[in-house]
Amino acid sequence: MSRALHLLRTTFGYDAFRGEQAAIVEHVAAGGDALVLMPTGGGKSLCYQVPALLRPGCGVVVSPLIALMQDQVEGLHQLGIEAAFLNSTLDLEEAREVERRFLQGELKLLYVAPERLLTPRFLSLLERAPLALFAIDEAHCVSQWGHDFRPEYIELSILHQRFPQVPRIALTATADHATRREIAEKLGLQEAPEFLSSFDRPNIRYTIVEKNNARQQLFDLIQREHKGEAGIVYCLSRRRVEETAVWLQERGIAALPYHAGLDAGVRARHQTRFLRDEGVVMVATIAFGMGIDKPDVRFVAHLDLPKSLEGYYQETGRAGRDGLPSNAWLAYGLNDVMQIKEMIESSNAPESQKHIERQKLSAMLGLAETTQCRRQVILSYFGESSQPCGNCDNCLNPPSTWNATEAARKALSCVYRTGQRYGAGHLIDVLLGRSNERVKQNFHDRLSTFGIGRELAEDAWRALFRQLLAGGYLQIDAEGHGSLQLTDAARPLLRGEVELKVRSHQKRIKASSDRSSS
Ligand code: ADP
Ligand code: ZN
Image (tube, rainbow, N blue to C red; front, side, top):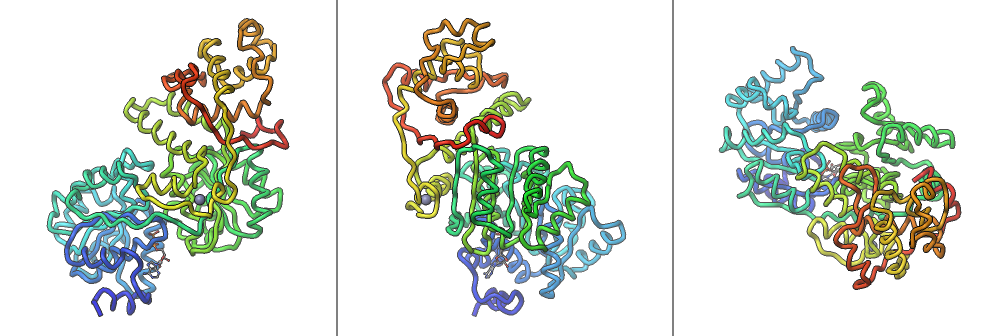
C-alpha cells in the first residue's frame, strides 16, 4: 500500500481516494506543482493536506475565508494533526505563539489569509521555516475574469519568485477556460499539470422558471418539495434579502437573513443556526456561502438572475453535497435582465471589464432561455461534453417553442420608430395601442407600430423583449438609462432574412402581479 493511502486510512479514516485525488496527491507529494479544478464537495482539501503530511515541513494554505480556516483547523485537530491559522481573529500573543510553532517545525498545516501572508513579517518567517508546500485555495480569486476577484491574490505570484523550490498547488471549484488560463499565468503554473474533475453534480436538479410572483413561487416550491428542509435563497439586494426573510417567517418557515450589511455578530449567529439547526432557510446575498460546508442543503433558490454562469454554478453547488437529490431553482424575468444590464452599463468600470461582464451575462441568459438540457449547457461552458441528463426541467418537461419571427419584427420596428429611447414598458404600451399620457405626449399613437401587437398579451410581450435582449437582438443604451436599442443582429431579423424560435412563455395565472414582483 502506498504511504498516501496508508495515511488516508489511518489518519483520515477514509477507505480510498476519490476521483483525481490519488493522482494529485502523488504528484504534489513528489514535489510537483498542480492546478486542481474540482467541483464544490469534490474533496479538494485532502489534495493538499495529505501531501503536506507526507512531506517534511509545514503546508502553508492561503485561504480568503476566516470561517473556513477555523473549521478546517478544528477538523484537523480532531484527527490529531498539528494545525493552526493566522488571521485577524488572533490577538498578538496568540499570533506570536503560532509563528513560534511554525518556525520550530511543530506545525504540519498553517492556514493564512492572503493579506497576512504578503506582509514583510510573514514573508521573512517563510524564509526561515521548513516548508512542505503552498496551497492556494479559491484560486479563481486571482482572476479578473472570474467572479470573485481579490486584488491581494495577484501578489501571490511572489511565492514562486521567492520560493521556487516549494511545490505549489492551486485549487478552485469554478473556472472556465479563460479563468484557468489566467490562474496559471498569474500564479506561474503554466508548466504545471491541470487536474480536471468532472463538474457534473448529477444529484442536483436544475429548474429555471419565468418569474411571476417570485416569493410565492418559492413558497410553493418549499411547500411542495422541501418542508422542514435546509435551503439557501439568493437575492440580489440586501433589502430583498430582509423583506424575503420576513415574508417567509410570516408563513411559518424558519428563514434567516444574511448579508454584508448586518452586524458581524448577527451574521455569525445566523450562520451557526443554519449549520447546526435543522431546516433553516438562509435568505442571503452572494456574500453568504463560500466555504460553508453543510452537506444536507436540499435546495438553492435564486430569486434574481445571477450575473454569470460561474456564479450560478458555484451557488447552486452548495446544494446536495451529501449526494442526495437536491434542487437548484431559479426564477427570472425581464426586469432582472434590465437591471443587470443597467448595472453593467452605468458602472465606472473600464470598457474591457464591461465587455467581460456582458459576455458573462450573455452566457447566463443563454442558460436561462435554452430549450436544450440545462446540464449540457452548464457542463459545456466548463469545457465538458455530455448527454441530456434526464434530471433538469428541460429534460423532464421539454419546453414548447413558437415561431416568434413576426412578433419580434413588430417589437424591433417599434423600438426603431420610437427612436431607440424607451424601455420595454412604454414599447409594450405602444404595441398594445394604449394611448396613455406618455404615448400621446410623444405622438406615439400616430406611429405605424401603434396597436400592431394586440394579438399578444402584455406578459407575452415582456417575455419576448426578455428573449430579444437575451438573444442579443436588443441592447441597453450605454448610459444605462434602460432604453432599448437595436443591435446589428436585429437587422437580418427585421429584414425577414432569419427566423426566430423561442421558448413559449408560461401561461400566467396572475399576470397582474408580474410588474411588482419581477
Ligand atoms: P471541497 O473543498 O472540494 O468542496 P472538501 O475537501 O470540503 O471539498 O470535501 C468535501 C467532503 O467530502 C468532506 O466532508 C470530506 O471529508 C469528504 N471527502 C473528501 N475526500 C474523501 C474521500 N476520499 N473519501 C471519503 N470522503 C471524502
Ligand atoms: Zn437535462
